[in-house]
Image (cartoon, rainbow, N blue to C red):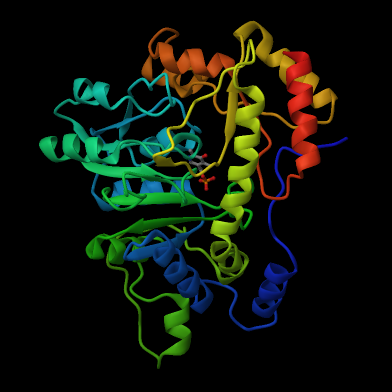
Length: 373
Ligand SMILES: *Cc1c(COP(=O)(O)O)cnc(C)c1O
C-alpha cells in the first residue's frame, strides 16, 4: 500500500473556477481575490483579509507596516517552520527565541516576559500543529510592554481557545495556502486583522506601495497612480483565489474528517509503550493540522525510514530553528539553549492527516507504527 503524506482537496469544482479565470481577461489581483478575502474574513469573523503570495510575506509585511526592523527584537518560538523567524530577519529585526511548553509545543507564555528587552517590539506566537496559544495571556503581556502581536496561524485557520480565534486578539494573523496546508493554491497566503489602518497599508504594501491595483486601473476611467510608500510584490492573483474559494466554503467539512482521523489515531496510540502524543483538552478546538507522535530519540529516524519503506509518508515538524547552521553562526545559538524544543525536535514524527485519507489507510498506518515501535 502507498499512503501519501499529504493529498490536497482540489477537485473538478476548483478546476472549473480556475478555467473561468483563465478564459477571462483578468489573471492578476482582482474581483476573485476580493471574493476570497470576504469569504475568509467571514469564516474567521474578522474585519479584513488581504490575499498574499505566502504566509512568510504576511509576517514580514506586518512587521514592516508597524515599522519594526533594524535594531528591533521580536520574540518567537524555535519550534516552527523556519519561515516564522526568517520573516523577522527579512524585516531587518532580530528573532529572540523563547522555549516551548512540554504539553503542547507552543511558546511558553511564562517565559516571554523574561525575554523582553528595551529593543523588543513584537511577539510572534505560532499555533503549533493547530493548537491555539493562550492569546489572552500573550495580549496581556504585549499590552503591558506596548508590543505588537503577530500570529503565525499557518496551522490554525480553524482553531479556537476560550472563544478566541486567530486575528481576534492580535494585531494581525497570517495564514499559509502552501501545498500541504489545510487549504491550498500551491503557493499563497493571507493576512487578517481588525485594524482598518493596517489593512489599508498592507493592501498597498503587497503591491509596491501603489495607490491603485491593476484591477482598479483596468475598471476605472484613466487616472495616474502614485507610489505613497515602499512595498513588495506579494499580491495574490485571481487564479490562486479561484482555487481557494470553494475550499474556504468546505473548511468545516474538511475539519470534521480530519477530526475523525485524529481521534482514531489517539485511541490507537493511547497507552502504547514507546508512543506519546500531546493530549488536547476537550475545551480546545484544535485545528487538526498535524498529528504528531513522539518516540524515543534513538529510534525516531529509523522509524520514519521503516514507515517510508512500507509506503507510509511521515515527516518531522520540526527540528529546532536555533540549531540550523545559519542561526547558530549568525546569532550564536547552541545546543542546550531551548531544552524542551530540542527534546520534541529529537522525538517527533508527523503522520498523514487529510480528508482524502481513507479509514483503511489510517488502519494501515497505525499497524505499521505499532509494529515498528
Ligand atoms: C507553512 C508555514 C509557514 C510558511 O508559509 P508560506 O505560505 O510557505 O510562507 C509559516 N509558518 C508555519 C508554522 C508554517 O507551517
